[in-house]
Image (cartoon, rainbow, N blue to C red; front, side, top):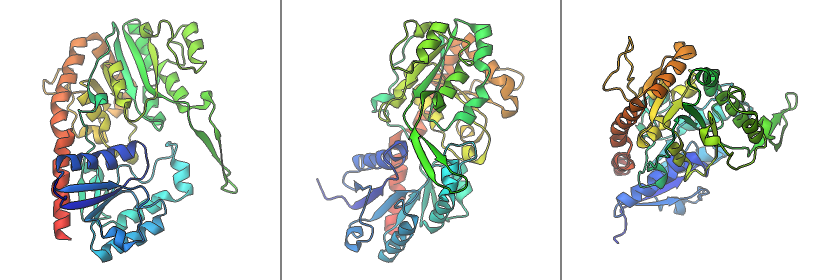
Length: 411
């Protein structure tokens, strides 16, 4: 193999989902697509004070900050500028979580929102997930690129293998920070159970009891942590929303769930609710095979407005019908299949909920899909047709390569 023309250094911010979608996978795929042109090193602790080390690279990519120490990161950026090495700061989440976000107190306590904004001001170039977020950051930097989250369909977890059921399964798959979003659905389980009992099932994916409780002393600011108890977990609160505080379940099934042990209840597949435990980031998306309709409620505020549309993309690649909030990231690719007056838009690829009508439309639209399984299938196919040509990793990587070539050429 010929020596690659350009050498890139990728500095992820963590070893979890953000790293996978924003740092590691995109650049591994870049090298795979253009092996004669790009060589990629992924380094979590690069030698940023070593000029000879840095001179090995033609472009440096980092997420949020080059190091957890923002001051050290700023000094490293000055060093890169002196050496003439271009860099891109990637950011996929708003810097200031709202008060209902579990990270809010920690962010404020450590002034992370201030530090991230300073990091954006110091950045030579910025990349992000959507035009919506790029518009929000245009005051920090004149050079902003949009690299959407993308899917590699060669990954088994993104290859649909539907699990059949006599019920229409309504699912939610996400992280632990979405309590305020899921509160929008409170009461939905009880209403559907009253009108469609034995016809549907809610599926909650990602259930996880790991983690700690962090307590901050308001007087001293001292932080203390301890292991979380099952009943304190946000996933238990999620479960209460999807079971109407367990009223939609038999006493036997409720008692089983309250043991918090992994295992299968004797009749859970024929129940109005199913708990699916968390999976690693490399297999989590296979959970989409457990349901037919994907729900994406979203509370309206700036943090959610600039989020990526990953839920739409994942649902599309899995050919799932989607009911989503008509807000922020879900307005980028979603076309409402229900027209004003109740007619069906043949070009629609999902059902969009007006936030002012949360109290009735989540029930109405979920009910409509439960009553019309053929519409569920049609919406999944349309979303697949609209999403996959845009968010296939080959497509986004081609654009990424064009941007990188140009930045290196100009340096």
